[in-house]
Length: 189
Image 1 (cartoon, one colour):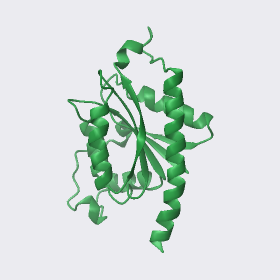
Image 2 (cartoon, one colour):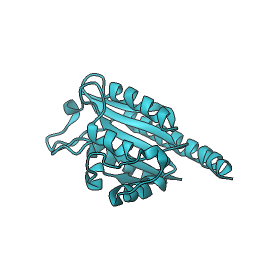
Image 3 (cartoon, rainbow, N blue to C red):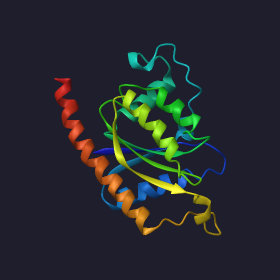
């Protein structure tokens, strides 16, 4: 199973990359085939395809490359900040570019923000996941008031409980990726 961990921020000095890279390390330690997809490196302009993604007729080269990256995944974990009680516009933009590449694949969430830890961002993403025919997994990892747990170098200090939750998210994502891959193969026949 190939799991893609997708970042959700491109802000200068972003915290987002820390939980994403940490989650990738946890996945590798567990022997899970995972890859970090940094939306900053995708360098997608604001959505500019002339045909809706649901039609599967991508015209632009950046969309085709992004579709190839997302399409090879069996499951996803989105790492999202919470901006104004929702998720980031750069993550929305990356999601909206594609359609079939998301279909019938599990998705989990890691979020961060103030007291709610990004929970409201995830709630919005759950609605989007349903529309994209993704299997939204219940488990999530919330990092509330993350700035309170940064050391003098600005590095987040993950707890044992957060590690256990990350392992649960990874295990669930892999389990459902396996189940859904088999189902997708039946659907393709």
